[in-house]
Amino acid sequence: MRIFGPVPSRRLGQSLGVNNVRPKTCSYSCIYCQLGRTENLQLEREKFYQTDQVLKEVEQELIELDKKGEKVDYFTFVADGEPTLDSNLGKTIKAINKFGVKTAVITNASLITDKQVREELKKADWVSLKCDAVREKTWKKINRPHGKLKLSEIHQSMKKLSQEYEGELVTETMLVKGVNDNRGDLERNAEFIAQLDAFKSYVSVPTRPPAEDYVETPTPQKINMAVQIYKERNIKTEYLIGYEGNKFSSTGDIKKDMLNITAVHPLKEEAVKELLKKCDGKWSQIEELIEKGLIVETEFNEAKYYLRNK
Ligand code: SF4
Image 1 (cartoon, helix red, strand yellow):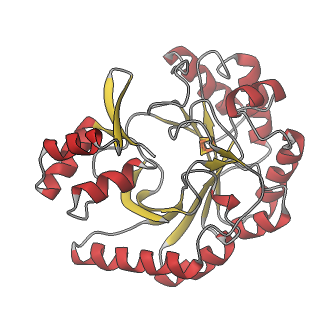
Image 2 (cartoon, helix red, strand yellow; image 1 turned 120 degrees about the horizontal axis):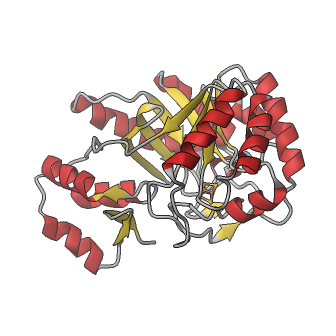
């Protein structure tokens, strides 16, 4: 169980992350996943952690943040995998509400064919559904889903949730060069997303090191085409451009911060330097983590990133 952050989120302000599943446990193994390939491809929900344990850790974190005068805008269930695989999700969202902070869930939507999962998501204030591809062939190529998943059923359930949900429902489409950035795929996506009447639809591109080396960012022309195709269907589209910033909160313990944050959020070199400043730390501490094999240094788009090595 890891509570991390708050990290600056492009959509949610200062977001305290709740990592509620076992590492790399997901129903997809997306080619662009920043966590690497999925080790545990599963569809069965499990109780990974007890709700009481989550509450206790969140409470401790809030006390620490309060001492530093830092605020949290959202508790975000953004796991080291797929958060709806946690069968305690609904119970935990309900219980965590006692802290008076809004809750968000970032899900790949593959499990919402289960009515229980939809009911649990309805308890959150903000839900993001992944929608990278509507064409079956493209979906399999980009998201590499569990073999038992059926895309048509997922789509029906997404529509159902959008009709029933009272919070802010958003969609997110990750564009990968040569995979889903062509006009045909984008038009199919847009036609489907338009039916969800989402509060907002985000179009994003890989900005962190992906699971597969061949993943590349689409050209600016293709990104622009995607946004225009979505907008033509009256979808409230926003392009998530750029990096979130380096305003990562610190506990004062650089090792703890590096291990917690990089487990779900690869850090750019400048962000690591900012953290070091806050902790009064030295670069040699980062080198030590690398030497011990706890984090790895990698490059993407000519920038250095640091990630947790499991
Ligand atoms: S990007 Fe999300 S849905 Fe895709 S494999 Fe990674 S954790 Fe799972």
